[in-house]
Length: 147
Image 1 (cartoon, rainbow, N blue to C red):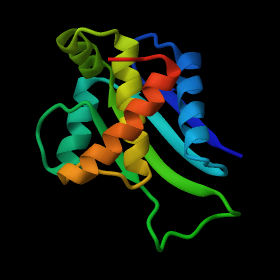
Image 2 (cartoon, helix red, strand yellow; image 1 turned 90 degrees about the vertical axis):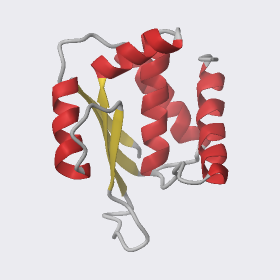
Image 3 (spheres, rainbow, N blue to C red; image 1 turned 180 degrees about the horizontal axis):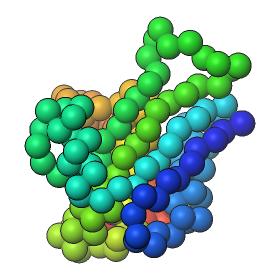
Image 4 (cartoon, rainbow, N blue to C red; image 1 turned 90 degrees about the horizontal axis):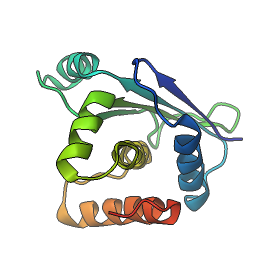
């Protein structure tokens, strides 16, 4: 059983069913079952507050993840609780304009980027970044969201 929920805490309309299909594809590609996580869509003010409180950075960002799982984290009834992905819808809209692609493409990228962070991937080294971004692009391209 895989369970994820999308919580849109903004007034913006998103294509939630398409976003769910994208996440289902990522779960399938990673062969994940019995996982639980949240995708929380917020505005710039809220993500700035979260960034200040948890990362001590007083600025807006596009995505913040709170990964709950590590090697010592117990599984509850065989369910892996991965954590939460916070995405600023306003920042995603700005970045979509900047990168000259659709808002959905940017939202999809940020969602999959956060998803891979929940799985422990990062981009702290050039090698790690290459691995993470390749995985992200494979999901996005298979879904039909090319650069």
